[in-house]
Figure 1 (tube, one colour):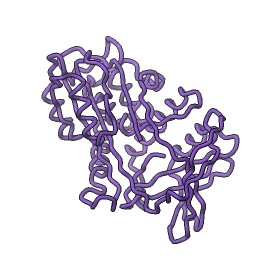
Figure 2 (figure 1 turned 90 degrees about the vertical axis):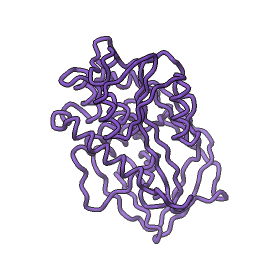
Figure 3 (figure 1 turned 180 degrees about the vertical axis):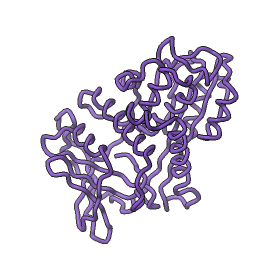
Figure 4 (figure 1 turned 135 degrees about the vertical axis):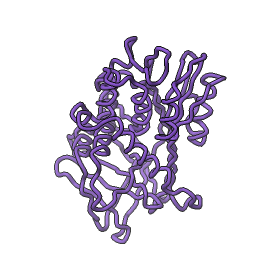
Length: 332
């Protein structure tokens, strides 16, 4: 149940934002399909920022560039109508908005997101100045030499995530790393009380049941909780975080409906959430740690050239480079 930016009434999404949203769901659904129903926890936004750092280093009018562009834009059709500049502008604007939400507020009075980018070199690799300057300007991405290899990158990630994510990079056998890190600290507007947590049965995506603690709460009409019901598909409820900048969406598929089918419908376009008056919500309480390689996922989404010896990252460096892996780690 990831945090999402609270929608602004009567503000239609830009074509670039809609494309990025479509790409996010495509990434999530493809990753979830590879888990065999065991569940999936990842941040498509973080992945998209990292891929965009790679996109801006790819040679123009190459397969490396066009495949990355299509993946970030949510498909070849969107990529045909949107350029690299459109996506850069939207991602830069989004980063400013997310990092600004809750900034300067007293601890606990507002939820806070920190989104950061960095570019690292190792083993004597140098980056093109034009690339370094552009990434700094667009995404506030710092370019640094990793004198101590993975240790330096891991220290940066751990710092941004307030100690949540450690040891992301496991090897020193690399020439450059394009990194994104996101930290989110959320405080419910209407807090779940510890004494209202009870054990119950939870059904996994693989149709197995297990006993887990459930956070329970009766919401009143004045809480203005919003929800949407797609008959025969799912029920979804939006739970706001303090500060009114973020909310969490909890989506429950209807009996017999696969989570992938429910999410595909949810991600097909903006959903109209309406106030529901009184309602009862019960959510499983859990902690998660996940680390996975996204190489296979990206292959299935059409990103292939970047991983081979014929990759073209000539705007990134004069050194011949290709992507060895895309590694994603989450704790929460």
